[in-house]
Length: 530
Image (cartoon, rainbow, N blue to C red; front, side, top):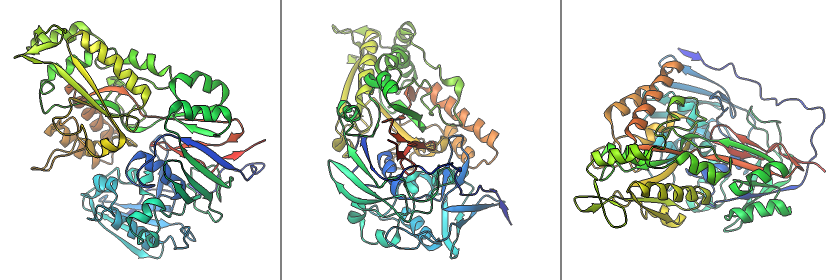
C-alpha cells in the first residue's frame, strides 16, 4: 500500500504586475573550469543546473519540492518510490522527457562502466538501489533494497539532472563537451580555457516550483567565462565586462557590498575542514590531534584573512547551514597554546631541535598540509593556512604547506596515504547525507578514498547507518548530531571555514539567485533593466 507523502504545490510561480524585460546576454565571471560540463564535482553541478532539470528540488530548510516530478508516493516500508512526471517536456534535442528517459538515467548513473556512470550517484545510493522501471508513460517506480531517508535529498543535487538518453548514446567524449538536458539554456559552444556559451531554450516549460517564474528565460543567453584570478574576475565586474561574478575576493568584500548586489550562501555537506590523517604518526595519537587543534587561533586567522566575506566554522564535521548541524560544537578547540604544549608533552614530544621543532625518538613533529590550490582551496583560504602554520610553529609543529595544481591533484599527487598529515577539503551536499561517503569504513583491501582522515570508528558508522534509515526527523537529527560529536571529540576533523557561494552582480541585472542547500547560481529568472 503506497502512502502519499506530498500534497505538492502547483508549478505556477508568483504573479507579477508586469513581466520583466526580455533580451540581453549575461556575462558571468566564474573561477574554475572543470574537465567536463557535467559530473560529480560541484563546479560541474553549477554548470549542469543551467541546462538540465531534476526530478525534485530542495529548499534551504530541507523541504523537498516538485520539479520534473509533479508528485510522488513512498510505500509504508519506505522502499518503493513512485514518481509522476510532468507531461509535454522535451529535451532540447527533441527527445521526449518521459518515464523511460528517467529510467535510462538511473541505469546510466549506476553503470559499471566508469565512462558512463555518475560517481556521486554510485557513492550515495548504489548500495541501496534495486531497480527503476517505467510503469506508465509518465510514471517511474524506484525500488530500494532498504529504507534510505536521504534519497529525495540526493536526487535534488544538480548532478542528478536528467539528460537526454539520445544524446548520451553519442559517447562519453561528445557528452563531456556538449551534454543535452531540458533546462532553460542550451550549450552552444565550449571554448576551452575561455568560456561556455549558452543560448536560451525557447521551449522551456519545466522550471522547478521554487523558480520565480515559469517558461523560458528572460535573457537571450549566458556567457560563462572562466576567470581564475580573483582580481581579474572582480575587475571585470568593475569595468562592466562582466554583469555578475562568482566568489567575491575577500579584499573587495566591503567595496562590493556598497557598489553591487551581493548575495552569499553557505553550502551544506561538510565544511572546508582540516582532515587529520589518523592512520599514521603523529596524528594516530589523539593527544597530538587535539594539540594541533588548540595550537592556532583559526577563528582569528579566518577573520583577518577574509574580512567578513567568509565566517569561521568551528564544527569540522558538518556545515553550519545544514538542518542537522550541532550548534554546540561550533566552539570546539579554542586557541589555547598552553593546553597544546601540555598535550604534546604528555604524548612524548618533549625535546626540540635548534629550529624549535619538537622531537620524539629523534624524529621531528612535521605536519604536511596538502591541498588543491585554486581548485579546492582559494587563495584567501591558503593565506589563512599560513597564519595557522606560523602559530602552530610556536608550540613546536613543523608545518609544511604543499599546494598542488588542479591537474596534479586529480592525478593523485600528494594524496597518497603517506603523502600528508592534513588535507583541507570539503564535500558539497545538502546536509548529513554526506556522512556515508566520508566515513564509510574500508572493506577488506578496498580503501575508502573519500575518507582522508582515515578515521574508522564502528560506533560512528552504526550511527550513520541508523540515521540514514530513520524517517522520524527528530530521531534522525539526534543520531547525526551524536555522530558529529564523535568526529569533533576525536579531532579527526578540525573546523576551518564553510564553503560559501557568493555572487556580486551589476545593479542593472536583477533576480539572480542561488539554489537550494548546494548553492548553484540560477540565471533562468534573471533580467536586465535600463
